[in-house]
Length: 288
Image (cartoon, rainbow, N blue to C red; front, side, top):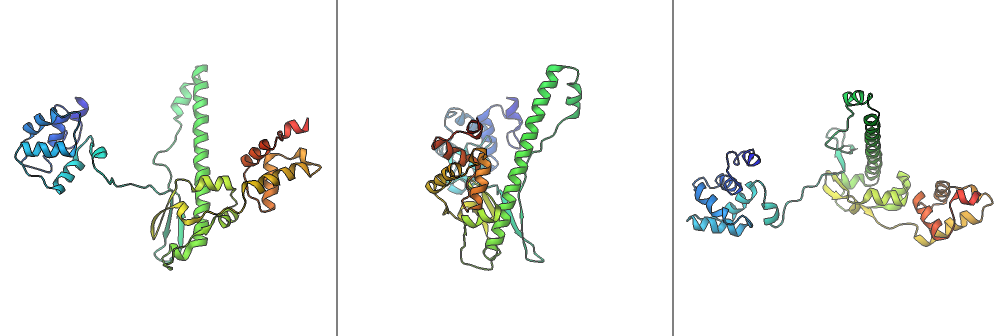
């Protein structure tokens, strides 16, 4: 009951959820009899749908056009309209923002950070120095905070690098100087950014970019044709491990770097996957 009374603005003073809904409906229909409406809704607590709202208004002898019904559903809080109405508007939070300077016309790239900020309270750290168990717990939490902070910094750097590469490749289209839709080949992005195939796939997945032309899925701006397939990459890994006399001293990362110089861009984890599929052990076991 206390939570219901804290609903602002129309839920304040409600005695139950049905009363709160009736008060909020009265924001749209000022002549609505709140008490009678709440009494009708109490018998329909399991299903407060558009049909129930229409039935309630017919019971009260009031007319409700579709536009008024839509406004009623949008003001209800808690919001049953989330499960009632079709075609809900989708709010997209862009991962990359490409803007055009109004003075110079140059395109700039920014990556919005999270809405929250991680911080370490020095009072908590100082108070935990006396208790060994508390100190251990605080150190563990501080380590987690630093890991998350490093992951956010790495994600920001990857997306910034990717956004700047898009500006370089698609500047006329993004700046609305060319009306013809354009996409950049993924091989070119990998070459410009220095990302491996695995990192590029993760960077493009479920990301959105806001440009002067509008908001797009990041993948829609990329021509998804990979230069290397799985079979040639697997053969290249096997060749790198078996042909060279010093192959026993090569780690997965060194193999990935050597293949990158040959134009085959795969990550260290992909090298490890191909190596295991070929039955080749890790460097530690090859040395022994």
